Amino acid sequence: MRGLRAKGLLTKSISIRPSPPRIPLKIPGSPLFRIPLLVALALSVAFGVGIVASVSALKATVGFGAIALGPWVAFPEAQTENTDPYAKAHRARAGKLLYGGAEGLEFTAAKDTAGARLTSLCSYDITGLTPPARFWTLRAAGADGQPIGAGPELPDAFNAWTVLREADSSFVIHVSPRAKPGNWLAIRPEGAFKLVLTLLDTPTAGSSGLIDLAMPRIVRTGCGNA
Amino acid sequence: MRSVIYAVLLGLVGAALLHIVIILALPQFTGKDAYSRVLGLYEMDSFFPLSSQPGPTGLANEDPFLRVAVCGFSVTASPMRFVARGDVPFWSLSVFDANSNEVFSMNDHTAVNGNLDLVAATPLQLIDLRKTPPESLAQSILVEMPQEEGYAVLRALAPMDSFEETVRNFLAGAVCEPFSR
Image 1: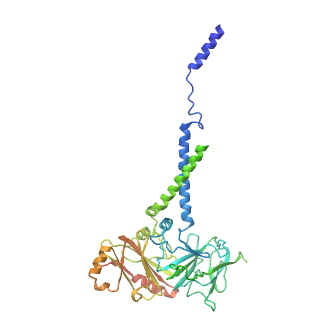
Image 2: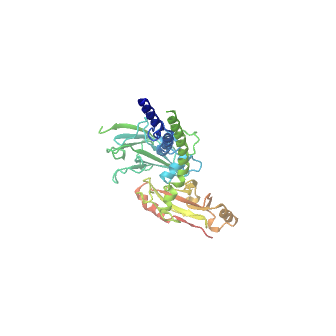
């Protein structure tokens, strides 16, 4: 009897005791913590992916509307009102003085004709002719577009007047960190670089594709000390 | 687990929206666009020749054979007139508005007698100029500005070092000033 009562009392006392607060202890199953966690996840994905995608899109390209002639790429509409939002955002971030339609067109090449990235550890030959233009200039630039500056005493740029030509008025320019005979465009052995060919007063920008535009070829001739 | 996938999908939709907002809004608040850099030179109403090394605003002659001068201007009070004369192998001028959109561009072959003589004005000022054309603007090209503020870029070609002085004189003599009758 006594033992039973004691048992009954015991059970009563247990049932009276308030149940322990379960919410802070069990995090995974609790809606109170799961929902803020999911909101935080969604927000971090939104901001992280959104910002990274925007920055990388602006770094990767100047925008749509490129004309590509072999490895040479130009954006004839990038400075106009009609260009796409990517080009407008890119030019607002780069802050460059772009060429107007009647001024010229700037072609850049970051790859050679075979499709391999240009690196200043290798030597390249630029051969052929430019599209019709009153004048052209050719220079090497770093990945950020600034001149890589091989030094004031070295030939670091060519133009339509200073280049030495073949009998058929085509030209061969040797781009190399080591001295070459003929047209030598000196670069510093520092890694990736770009070639910038500016055509001044050219009909290329407004071309409807009726003229066969031939840009010079960029051929790798050797790497290292070879 | 399913709610985590939903959250990530929702985040991706938000990322797409944010991407669009960033790309569209960026030109308004970079502070590094070409017009802000031109204003940062503190040289309004005159052609400012750029150096080969980037100055404090980051503007420079990028092409080793082209010498560049910029002029920030406003046509709010009166039209702007651009004049340049000289015997350089090639020169070109572009007029941009404050959003860096090209308004007008020309070179020495599209100019009258190979000399630069251009007037940028608001539509109202243009009506006034055409109603009673001043004698001095008989040969000028008249250009309508879609906005009141903008900048002009004048480039001159120096294919060899011997042209350096001619080109420097050409840019130094170039005029960018408010026009008044």
